[in-house]
Length: 402
Picture 1 (cartoon, rainbow, N blue to C red):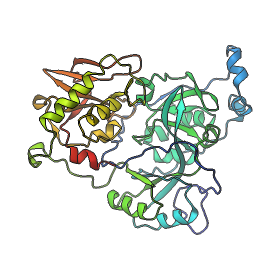
Picture 2 (cartoon, rainbow, N blue to C red):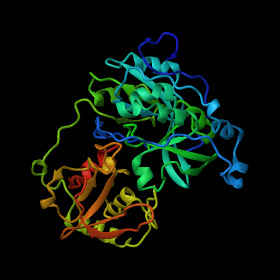
Picture 3 (tube, rainbow, N blue to C red):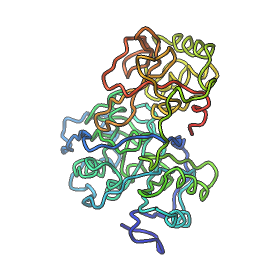
Picture 4 (cartoon, rainbow, N blue to C red):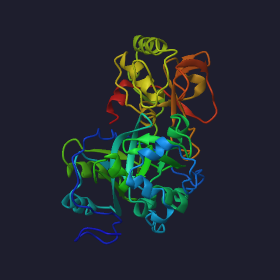
């Protein structure tokens, strides 16, 4: 790997100079203590890239840019280096401006830091949906993903060739089916794989070259591997070295917070009866509204967007995405669930530990939720298939999730 002068040679990151101003909304990567559990039985779905055929419609061919035509030629695919030593990620940082070499050297010298990797991060509209996207160097970034993902040469070859690899949640709930061509800011992109990266808030991976075409800001994201260091303390130290507005999330945190039982929480820690009634009424007022990936209301919602909006009507500030909402209070048994508790599922076969769906418990064995693309907000019987657990929301805990 290439690195800036004066930085330890065993740090696997790529330093690039220059950059451009970010004209897009930065990804709201918010700090949580539980993001994703990476396991060895991850399912990886890859659609092998085939040479383009004359069956492509004339309008699509007319919209191809020279870069897209180049990516369609298998002979022009940039080579991807074999995977080397794997690095488990622990802290993921996003800044408003590109990381400087001075900042990277300071972070590299923090106690326990073993490896760093630069990437480009932003929210990009893919097929009309706001998608949290990461542009990476396939040769180096692959070492920071789970083993089954890291060792898939076809996946990284496809990404290097210009494909986009998406999360199972985006593919299944968001309607982006495998090997389909979708519209992006720079023209059509091909869905080349469903695969977990291990970063809960990231739903799409592209190469850095494709990221440039999509308009992603340069070098504004950093992955840190520090397997023998308290992740929360490391995050705080990193943020002290960076400008105000920088954000950091824990990934596979070392020494995560211990689970606290509901009965151990102080009286008054949970929502009042009035708040629960207000949240349930607000959610019920949206029955029949369409599911739209990334939508936060008031006329359409995704699953976590509906929860955030409904609880806001009760004066409860909820974080935005499912894996953040998972840590807004203690877990309770399903048999003890009350109306207004949140139900969570792990539906993603490419990342079995990841919290991928949320619903509001309605009572009497029923739940209210926004299911997936093509469906609407509805009340249905509770499904226990892949159920991860039930959370009783504490407004104080929810407000502290950053």
